[in-house]
Every structure is written in structure tokens, then in C-alpha cells.
Image 1 (tube, one colour):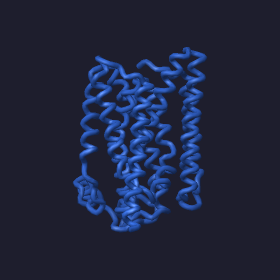
Image 2 (cartoon, rainbow, N blue to C red):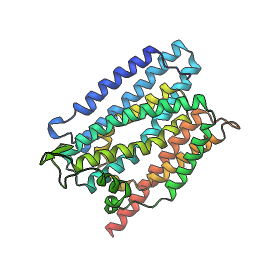
Image 3 (cartoon, rainbow, N blue to C red):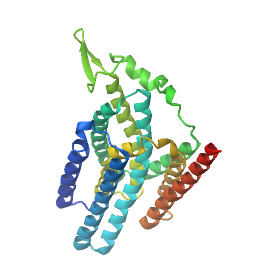
Image 4 (cartoon, rainbow, N blue to C red):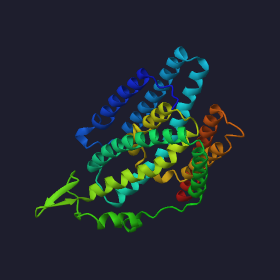
Amino acid sequence: MNTVGTPLLWGSFIVVVAIMLLIDLYGQNKKKGGAMSFRQAAAWSLIWVSLSLLFALGLWWYLKGTAGQQVADTQALAFITGYLIEKALAVDNVFVWLMLFSYFSVPVVLQRRVLVYGVMGAIVLRTIMIFAGSWLISEFDWILYVFGAFLLFTGIKMALAKEDDDSDIGNKPMIKWIRSRMRMTDTMEGERFFTRRNGLLYATPLFLVLILVEISDVIFAVDSIPAIFAVTTDPFIVLTSNLFAILGLRAMYFLLVNVAERFSMLKYGLAIILAFIGVKMLIVDFYHIPIAISLGTVGGILLITLVINAWVNYRHDKRLEQ
């Protein structure tokens, strides 16, 4: 696997991620159960985005001195593009978490534990999936066409999908299957995932929520990771852009917790992005879309989506006032 990642870059990345994880997962509002106000969540979200951009700048500076201007420009743009794609798709993932916490009535003070393990699990799972994907691409070039077709199909499906009914989550076949294969209590047991009753080990509903959070991340990773491979196949750039986008998800969760319903147009923007990336992968042998154009297209789609979303919300609020 060809990569710009050197031992120094990998080591620096691991150190930065470890420090950020300690701060993000254990250093913020631990006494309050990890809950954040909207202002705190916005501030921390800005911090994580800024740190990610600083990493991109540091990567560009290092590569410029070791590999040249062209390589530095290309890889830094690839990092930012991958980061932007993953961050946008992560918003949809957060909406699923909101829906799960709402359905299972998980108190805010208990959500922190699930979010901590959820983010840690996401990092481990995505690292495995990214290296597996890099190996597959290095061994089988044609798999990029499979990724492209899958992303195009997913984009179309996302655009046409109906809104999920929160009240119907408990009737999903997956949840019924999980419940049928483990002893589970009917009520929460504090922050515990397991408890003992009459000498038998029982899982709590909080553990079921954790399982569903991890499953949801795998599902979204199946979309986002192939999308980043459309930008670059360098495992260092793919992994770093992906994990930097995941860091700070807890802050993003509390940022969106009270405004999720006001992003009704987001799924259409994400659908167009996935379809665009799918087409980019399918036509790569005929025309290679430059990374700068990909970045501009993804950024432009997100900006237009947010503008349309703001207009829809404005019209909705005006109708409510009448």
C-alpha cells in the first residue's frame, strides 16, 4: 500500500489522537455526567475542527519539505476533503443516536457512558475497516467500481427514503433478534451494562442501546469509508481524516440534540454527495476529477443544502406565527 505516512507522521498522529481522546472523552464536564450546554458544545466543536485544520496544515508543511509542493498540496486537499465528507455523514449518524436515546428514554446523565464507548468502538472498527479496504484495493483494483456503484445506489436510496418512525424502533427485526438471545432487564440499572439477579447475569437496556449505537456506526462507516477512498487510497490520509472527524462527535451530539428536527434537508444534500462520489469512482478510467474540484463540489453542496434548509425553516416558522 503506497502511503505518505512515515514513522514520524504515524507516531505524531497517534500521540495527538491519544491526547484528544483523553480530553474529549474524560476531561469535559465529567462531574455533570458529560452533558454540555449548547454554548459549550459549539465551543468544543470549533476547537476540534480547528485542531483538525491545524493537523492538515502541519501535514502540508511536513510533506512540502520532504516530498515537494505538489505532493503536499494534493495530500492536504485530500485530507480536508475526506474530513469534510466524513463530518457531514457523521451528522446523520448523530441523528440516529438521538433517536435511540429518545426511544429508550436514556437520561442525559447516562448518555455519556454510551457516547464514550460508542466513540471508542467507532475508532477501533473504522481503523480495522480502513486497513481492510486499503488491502482490498491494493489487491483488486476493480473493487473501486463496486464502491462507486454502491455509493450511487445509496445516494439514490437516501434521497427517496421516507422518514423513520421513532415509535417503531422496538419492532425492528434486529432489536427483536438481540432481545431474544440475551436475558435483559426491563429498567435501567444506573450506568451499568450488566447486573445480576438471582445469581444470573442480565444485560440492561443501556447495553442494548450501546450495541445499536455501534451497529449504526458500522452502517454509516460502510458509506463514508468508500466515499473517502474515492478521494484518495492512501491509508494514512483516509485514516487520519476519518478519525479526526470522529473525534468531537460527543460535542456534536450535544450541539444538535435540541435542533435535529431543523435539519430536514440535510439527507438530500448527503444523498447528492454520495451520488457524486459514486459517479466519480465509476468514471475514473475515463476522467479523473481533481481533488480540488471534489472539495469544492462537496463544500458547495453542503453550503447550498444549509441555505435551503434555513429557507425551509424560515417559511415553517412564519406559518406557525400566522
